Each structure stands twice: as C-alpha cells, then as structure tokens.
Length: 421
Image (tube, rainbow, N blue to C red; front, side, top):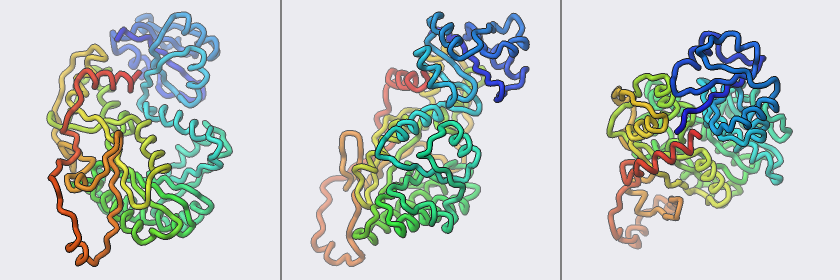
C-alpha cells in the first residue's frame, strides 16, 4: 500500500483533539506523506515539519482540490455522518476512518440505517435504548420522521409495554457483550441478556407482534463464561416460547454469529491503533482463532431471519475464521510495518476457539450454502413414543468452530484490505 495522504476534517463546533494532541497525531509516522486541513485557523498550530497544508474553505472546494491531486485513500477525523455523503460524491474516494471515538463500524452502520430508511414498506423504526447520547446524535444526523427514539431499558417491563404497541417486527440486540465484564458481574448479565430478553418476548407476544428476532452469539455454544451462559439461556427461552406459542400470532427466532470485524470493542481497531502508534501489538494467545464477519453479513443474516426464519429456528451465518496472530501479521504487511507482538494471556472467560454450531446441533442442522438452520424440536415431555419411533443417528459430526479450515493469509489480507479501505 502506497503512503497515504491524510485528510483532517475539523468542524469548528466539534473539536476532537486539543492542539498538542493533534500535532502529535499527525507527526508520528513516516508513512504519512502529507496532512491537509479544512480549517485554516487550525494550521497555525503546526510547524513546518508537520507537513500540513490548507486545502479549502468549503466542502466543495476541499473536494475539488483533493480530487485534482488524485488521492484515493483518506483518513478522516470528525463526524462521518455529516461529511461522508457530500464528500464521497465530490471526490469519489475510498475511505480509511481513524478516530479514537468513531470507529469503522459506525460508518457501515450509518449506510445500513440509510438503506432501511429508503425502503418504502417501512413506515416507522423505533429505537429503544438507554443511550441518550447516541439517540440524540442519530436524531440530529438523520432528521428522518420514520425514526422514533425512546429512552428505556429492557429490564423495565412497564416501559416495554408502550414501546411494542403497533409494531410488526422486533430486532432485539440489547445486551451486555463484554466477556470479562460479565465475568465480574454475572448477575447483571442475567438481568439484561436473559430477563431483559424475556421482557421483550413477553411484551411482543402481548401486543401481537408478528415476529421477534433475537441476536445471539457464538459464545452461547458450549459456554464457559457468564456472557455466553446468559445468551445460551436466552436461546433456550426462545425455543421454550416458540413451543408454547406455536399457534399464536407471534413467531420467535434467533440469529447466531461470531465477531463482527471493526465493531466497537473488537480487536482489529485496537491492532491498527497499536500499529500506527508504533506500539507492540498485544494478543492474548498465539493459538487463538476467531470467526470474521463484516457488518453487512450480520445484517444480511438478520434480514434473512426476518424474511425466512420460522418459529423456534436458530439461524447461523457461515463465516471464515483465522488465527488472531495472523490477523496482526497481515495488518503489518498492509501498513508496511514491523513491530513486536506481545502475548498478554487469556482474559477472564475467553476461549481459545469459538464454536458456531455444536457437534450435537450438527446432527440435526439443515445446511445451506451460506447458512445453518437449527429447526425447532417440537417433541414434548412424553418421551415414550419417541424412544419407540426415534431415528438412529447415522454418523457423528464435528462441531463448526473457528479452528477448522482457517483462511489463507492471502485471503485474510484481502479481507482486511476490504475492511479498512
């Protein structure tokens, strides 16, 4: 990858860095050819060695000048939800986003939300969460009458009663997701991931919601940590309710997937920060593997569940996997860096390998090109008839886990380039 030019977008009402931090950020690497700044007043803080030039007073002027230089790679600081649509049209560029508070997944999320808002058959999207800051940012960024924002917690049944009235589909993603945190506060994980999910299901059924889709994780398969255990219980809850309410108006199903690359708290943004800052790259164990999935793939799985998922099914998206140490090494190649790798040791509750489908589940899983489907077991507690009429298991299958058939380094490199370019 050739040395990139760096574009710093500074909105006067949103200062992300103080002056010294900004100077340090753009002076750390020889890989940076040039730095261009939109706010002319801000250039006074740079010395001659900072390689900073003023590029334009307006977005249009900046874009035109940038396009003339033939730049293809942009690192942008600031709020992408304001700048991307306009600037992308002007410069037709690929973007690398780098910001300690704004991560690549937020850019992809923005594009996905806009796609949903464009769909004519969607009349209203209700965003229910505890995060008033994000809700306020979304309200200001999208300014779309289809989006309705409600502050609340899935732990609170009373609030959910009003939220689910008149809704056709519920996508339940609220969860405590950090494995080490849940190890220290397992009771909180249960309150949100299990009891909160129960509240969502109860409320949806009471209001005759057509379909409830709950998001699960590979950590729910053979769980060894509180986060995975709480999610496994959530899946069991879905199966239980699907049997109870099979003839009612509401259909309930789950989607299960592994790591979404560059999502908040994931390892790839951490590695990139460490590489660019010339710090040692920290991994927990050299043998550790993980599934790798783009945000778009995760959303496709949820859409598939909304359109095709049946009552009580668990739908699982197939995904490539890789050793975490190989991810770090391929990022070194992409950024043309040579750095030390520091092994930190496994964190609380972590697995060496993650599993998306267990060995037992594989015996009845329906395998498709891109998915596994785990159908609902409709048997009741009267086992006598099933012992007499049961089918003989024909073969023993292996589980579908991240240690199997890791992708080649070439494919991994291309996948990472696709992610960060």
